[in-house]
Image (cartoon, rainbow, N blue to C red; front, side, top):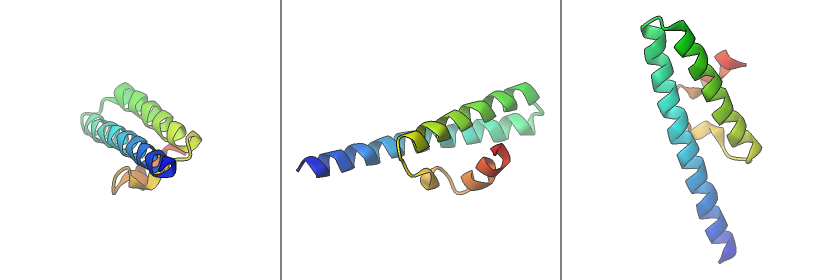
Length: 76
């Protein structure tokens, strides 16, 4: 029973982080369209922080968004 509860908590955390990453990715794409360079830079930092937090927690980063891999590649 405890394992099932822990699995649900991990899944919930992963989904919440993924939702946050998707919001940042959307805002980042919009800021790039608007040529808002400093805003894009700050959103790059925010996305990198979310990814870092997910990796530290051992969460799956592959569920963030269909284009997340391309964005992550730009950050590394």
